[in-house]
Image 1 (spheres, rainbow, N blue to C red):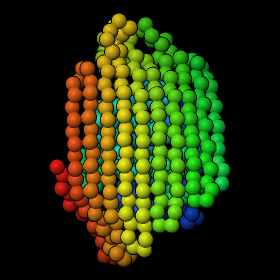
Image 2: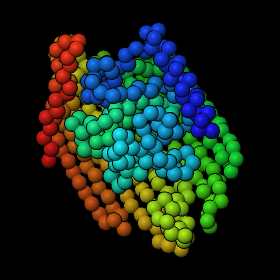
Image 3: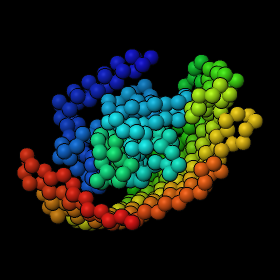
Image 4: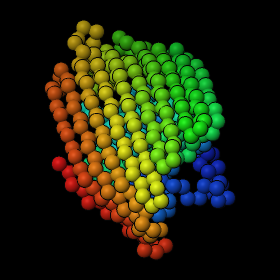
Length: 372
């Protein structure tokens, strides 16, 4: 099966190379190397861009499946449908890869094991930008290994026209059943989007338990453009319950079951006029994790919250000079019956300057942060 997927991926990339030769996708725009939209050839970074068209041509149903077959990314998945996945790049750990959704970080305050819990279905994604290598100068210490920057269709500058919908159904051995649905409509500069999925599998027989997995998810997004303003909002919920035998221990008595619930809310606002642009990102993520080692043990329960607020002022002075000034607040807290209660708050002021001296000499972004 893996060989088949590699062959299909190679065919897809071959088609993409042909399209590039024809000049249709020669130099994609990327935002993952800085907060300014920049041509990939001018970033000076190793960036891979996967578009929604590329995704639709691949035999994958979840984001972790997609990432697993891309070069330079190591995805170690436990259980079906990415019940729990660790993502690493360039030899870094799974806690050193930053996942960003529409400008806001997804990494959970509790554990890097939840980095693959992305609260959107594949049909919602407009593109995925993969920035390989250390990116702490721009995105912080949790981007040592690299950055996975996901842009969805509702939050992108490129909107889908009219009504669009898709329903997918898959079934297989061991009780496998997967259904996903996506619908969006765009009218009068307003776009509505709704999606839902249900994945389940009985899984193979394990020691005292089956390797089952159940997942339910729902997402609603709305965006509106009015003169120089554009706003977008998303709320999403994801509930996963799965067999976690020997995920964390090697004991023969381990018949663990884990359930993770994630509630995600996000609001983006953007104002643009002439050379000036103001962007505001705000988000809240709540995660509930219940891990039970066996049927007779007490569950380890933890609740984590992630608050984010990021405001940016960008100015394209001319074709050669761009700069960004911003302020960011991140608040993290954990309440756990086995790890205690912890709170961390961070505030930062930063500036990024980009200068194009010539076709052969482009400065890397200069980041001058102040953090507290």
